[in-house]
Length: 122
Image (cartoon, rainbow, N blue to C red; front, side, top):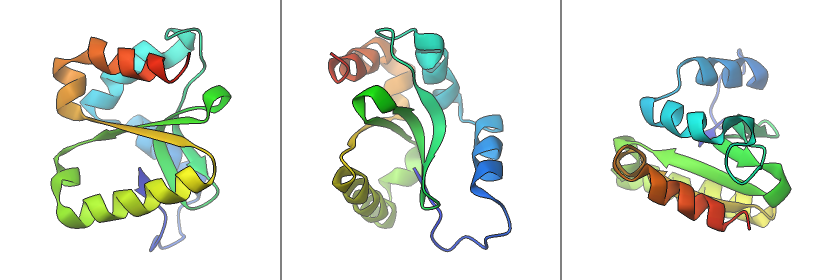
C-alpha cells in the first residue's frame, strides 16, 4: 500500500496509479492474472486502487470492501510495518477488510492465497 503522505504533489494520484500498474512487481502480476476479469468467485477486483488522495492499495474488491496487499521484503523493516499498521487501521475505520500476503506466499502457495481471498468473498 502506498501512502501519499510526504508526496511532492507534482504527480496526480491518477498518474501515480497508472505508473504503479505499469511497473507492478512479479508477485502483483502473478496474482492479478488470477483476479482480473472476475476469475475468482466472479468478483471484480481493481488494481492500484486509491482511497482519496491518501492511499493506493494493490488490489480492491468493492463489492466486499476487501483490500488485498502484497508485501515484499521492505515490509520486513520495523518502520515499514509500523506504517503499514497505521494505514491498515485507517482503512479498517473506513469499513474495509485488509488482508496481506508476502510475495513469497504468492510465488510458492498461490492456491492457498487464492483460497484465503475467496474465503473473504463468500
